[in-house]
Amino acid sequence: MSNPQPISKHSNTSQTSPHPGINNGKEPVPNARQEPFNSRAQFNEDFMVLLRRFLVTSLSLVFLVITIWRFSKVKRLARWQQRGFNTLSILFPGMTSLALGSLIGHLGSMLRWPLLARKTYKMQDVDLILDMSPPTCSLRLIMKHIGGKRTSRTTLIVTLYLLTNILGRLSVALFGLAFNIRDEKGINYPILATNWTSALWTRDIYPSTAGPGIPKDYEIVEDWAFGNNTALEIGDINPDLRPYLSILNATLEVGTDIVEYSYDLKDFKQDYTRLSNHTVHSAVNCSLIEVEQGQYWRWNKWNRTGPFSWGEDTKEDSNEVVARMLWVSNNTDIEYPHWVSFAASSNASHAPSQIYILGPGFAWECWPTLTETIATKSLQPIQPSEQLFHKKDLYGSLGVRSETDSLGTDEEVTILLDGISNSPAQAAVDSLDIICNQNFSMPLNETVWNGYRLWVAAVAARLPILAIMHANTALPRVARSPHPTQIVGTAFTYKVLEVGWLRVGIITASITLGQLLAIGIVLSYCKGTYTRDDSPLATAELLKTVINKFDGGKLMTGEKLALSLDGVLGGQVSYGTRKGQDGGPPEVDLASGLDVKFPPFPPGQRF
Image (cartoon, rainbow, N blue to C red; front, side, top):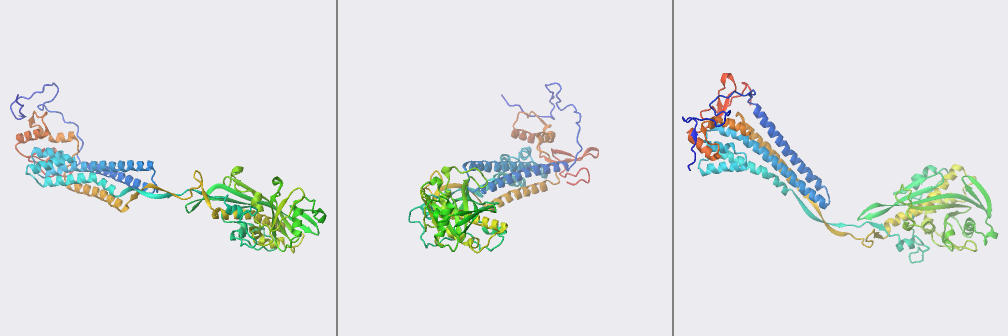
């Protein structure tokens, strides 16, 4: 069976439509409503399309750079962060490449019209030029021209467009040269806590514990024990309480009767300290005892009670703590303040907890309280099993055992009395000479007396806090659970994002400037030409003049149809204009013998 031959519409063969109601080209068709023509309208539309696609590309680049910047700030990339970065580093370049392809494709659709207008072509070339936007179609045009030995300026322009299309789409891949996820080696340092069970603490701070760490009589006292001791002057010292008795890294609260210091214990990680959520509170309330000729008087809230006897006849059977303290001081040559406390008792539940600061003719009786809470402001106490310090041991053992005595006949209590200035306790009370001196006179002024009382309480409350603060950093350390003995760091490998920001900047700027350059070149090349959109209907309308001269090609391929049209036309065609009717806009067409000039319309309009 032979193939049907194409039939020219200029032959004498009658053409009828097999379907009623469908026009076969013989009958006139009423003109559809037409929009007023403006030669600049299509240019403006093309410009807005290019602008939108340029903005989409730029926005994708911005998101990509932000993604790189944000992840580069992460010191250690977790597994989910690596996956997130991998996803985004593929997503945004993909969006950028799509936007670039869309922009370059529209530039290609604009290039078709000045190419078709600059010279005449066979319908085979017209078909290739109209379909040149995709890279494969551009390549097909180039190969046809090279294979047919008909290369021209059009071939060169399409080749440049093809290279721009390919390089533009692939340029985003250059970001792969700008960053890299690499392995880094680090050390995971454990959180270390002070070892409060260390012998250095139990022997040095608790001298009652037998062992080689007990301070000797003339051992030099460390600087921490002195605090910021300030020599006092007779008079109202209340304004000086906070400035002179405050401790760095500890909180001082001065009440009407009680002075309290609070210290947050520190943990350690590498060379840094961190709060351990464990706070020690040391609070003391003191009152004055006046001593004279075997008798003593108590001062409490400016009330003087007494006298009470502590004479020789009461020594053996007296169970009163203050009486025994006064016996001790009476048997010792006291020329300066002494710290007196209790180190041990045969009945621990009744062991006295008072601290006495003795002087010639006076004594300060202080009642200490040592508590531990969770965090500074919290009232939630630490469970007894988790407490690190014990009031009687800590307050009572900061002195040096230089003299012991017994309390009563049924209960043996060891008393610590500093005989020389070689202990933390004695160093702490060195500044109390005036307060404990026998020369300050009675009766006392209430305001002055209250300032002295609070100052003594602050000195007594401060000493254990100073000891704990010093030991917190000086003692050996243990790691917190689950591996207490693992106090050295553990090596590990982690991921970091390495970014070459100069490369990122160069690549981003190159892509952006390349878009602007391509847009500028194409707009300049298309200036003075009526560009058409990429609609198949608009293209079909333009080809109607040529297609109407031929019939029977609806089932042909584009290549065969182009060959048939070349045979029917017998010449070449170009894109151009004809003069409009009745002063109307020029008519555009794809035919032979057209004007290659595209005048602005309305007259005076500029492209």
